[in-house]
Image (tube, rainbow, N blue to C red; front, side, top):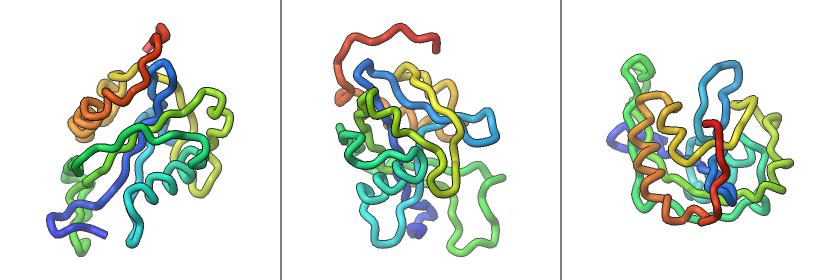
Length: 165
């Protein structure tokens, strides 16, 4: 499902704990980290897709999280030319995303698992709020920054923990 401008609808998932730290997931077989994300299937709402992707990518169910906020508009990024599949119809040049900020109580981290469906991640860690901007692939950095800026007011206001990252 690609829109008239060539963007594939997608959801991004930012999981936050009581200390304002974010769940940062490692792509399976790579030293590449990102937030969980995934496409919206035909007939799904962004919320439906978010819950499906949450389960498929990190094994969490709706009862394990609380939705704190969602971005107002679609945030878009273009794929680097090397990732655009020439000859594909319709041509996908990037993604447009609705970003969800979810609260994950630390007691529910025991439910995180990567063996649901086709695994995309093989590890995770808590990181400071702005850390993902230093670790995400460059072509996604602007969207991450825009999502984090828009959602920051919904982050729980607890005393932050000292972190290494």
